[in-house]
Length: 231
Ligand SMILES: O=C(CO)[C@H](O)[C@H](O)COP(=O)(O)O
Image 1 (tube, helix red, strand yellow):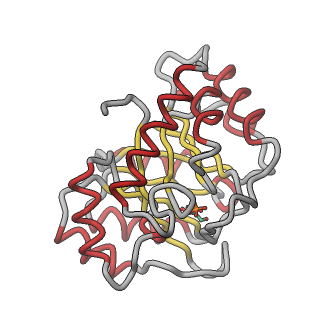
Image 2 (cartoon, protein in one colour):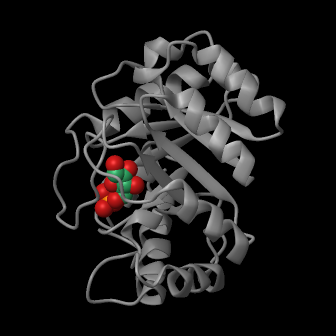
Image 3 (cartoon, protein in one colour):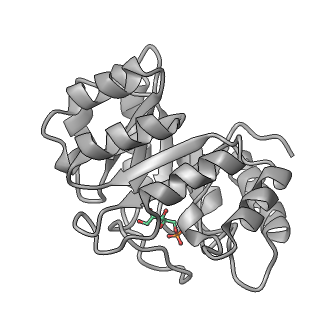
């Protein structure tokens, strides 16, 4: 099924010892980009995927890389990702001293620039840069860990998406709204009808245990269609 909602599987939820196999499966089912979390152990206390692994992944697939930095030294990691050759880089607002400079560096390499907001960070912080970013990633959980329980998502997720959507109405070229964190099959309909345009798919959807990636993809498509009906 074709949908204008972008599917970005979260690589940290794949089988990390069978990464190539899972990437090939994702290529076959048709996804829009691989969402790759780069976590430095300080911004959040986990380190699922390292720089070398991403460089190696670049050699085995032509899928777009949607890099999500969850780091403190963003300038360093932006530089490393640009060397690898990625299509989009999201960096966290909360650890960026020079937000506009980061955006400019990323864009000067022809790469899409995006910014992420932790659950408690207000969207008003982005007031002056909406027109300069390609995507805004709304974290619906406190970042760092994937989880296969349908819990952990902040209760104000839908309200935040609604507000973001309303705010972006006045933009000439509005950035895409991406949602990340426990984007479950149950929640996809309400997230999509609120205005989410890119879904980071993890352990409660595309990588749901007990089902194949292919079976889960059918369920994701169904959940998106349901969300579109309620639009
Ligand atoms: O950003 C992340 C962790 O911080 C993961 O990409 C995200 O949580 C996906 O996993 P899940 O859907 O299992 O929560």
